[in-house]
Structures are given as structure tokens and as C-alpha cells.
Image 1: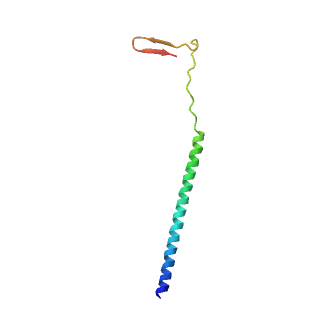
Image 2 (image 1 turned 135 degrees about the vertical axis):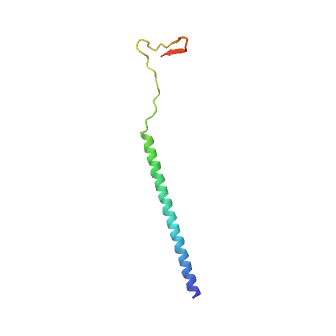
Image 3 (image 1 turned 45 degrees about the vertical axis):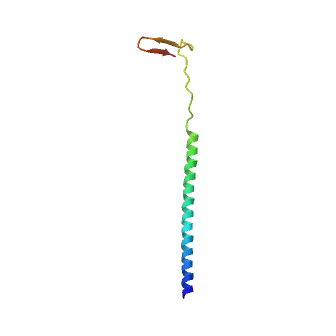
Length: 80
């Protein structure tokens, strides 16, 4: 009787251990899948972001690139 009880207890412990392993592995796989989807979505979103354009000043009509700087008594004025 003692050996049957020992065999059943060992089988129960092995069953619980395997079930815990399967649960942990499936949760880890689900977490890895979610992380992969988020990473791929982030990469795709970054690809569609507008790239910064350098700002360039266009010369005003009649100035043809001449910059005028003067002081009116209240501060320096720079006319591009």
C-alpha cells in the first residue's frame, strides 16, 4: 500500500510540475509575441514619420540676399 501511495504521489507531483512548466512557457511565448508586435509596429510608425527639413531663408524681393542691420534706439533690427 505504501508503494502505491508513493507512485501516485510521484505521478501527481510530476503532473503539477509539467502543467506549471507548460503554463510558464505559454505565458513567456505570449509575452514575446506581444513584444514583437509592438516592436514591429514601432518600426513601421517610425518609417512613416516626416523627416526634419532644414530651414532656409529666401531673400525678400529687392534684397537679393542682402542683410540689413540697424539700431532704432530700442534694439537691433536684423532684416533678412
